[in-house]
Length: 337
Figure 1: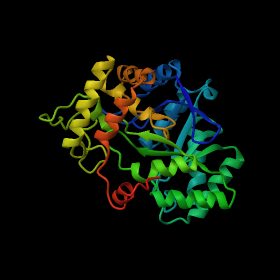
Figure 2: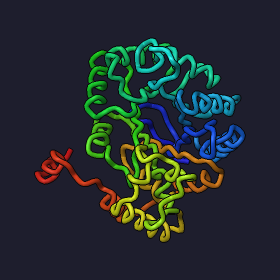
Figure 3: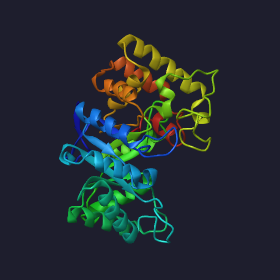
């Protein structure tokens, strides 16, 4: 599998990364430990080296499963985790304060059975903690060796820009990765983040690359998914990957094109959707979330699929979000950065 630089850093990551959000979750959507180990084994065997988890996935169980599966081969992979959301009942058991960050990272290292993580994300903006406090403790973690590189997720564009400015002014360890939802049916981050990441040397790490299963091609306009099963079907309407966000005319046009291109390449719609993301210059690695070996094998095929320039442009045009002000005016006047 191809390996790419994570932003402008020296860290190399596999073009496809393995997301582990449902590892250890209860219920039909969850992945039990034995199957999770099988998925990790196959992913590594196929040349995948980047694994992504978080301290709140399955209440910490995801980290435990990943740590157990990597015993004896920790150095073969790059390992990412996150900090921000609530991990207990106490007043300091959430956020990006020095206290919570240090306690959370130490707990993550214990669950992962390692003495360092390759990449630590700020999982979401914290309105209560001064940004300087967060960036300083992140820098200390890098200097101590417990963390190698830093990433950001679910910040607004101006918040990322402010953080990058402070990191540069104070010679603090920089963000080199940005994890955001990005797919052919969810491109809301395009107007700001791809330009920002390109200019600042931050690698995009898309999650939800198949639109919660929409881009697998298994759904039809006249068939609302059964709410008792499936990623989209079992997702509440308020969720980012809810059916109400996918069941739109533009998205069905995109899916029709994806199916046509897949047929031309003797590939699957999933592989085309993933391959399109891999053509984007800011993308370092794409996180795939799978529950079965069959799904993983299908997704792995995207690493060998090369789309033509015309095919990429077609998908770009069909999936482009409707421009808003001031982006319309910027585009109209030829001032696009």
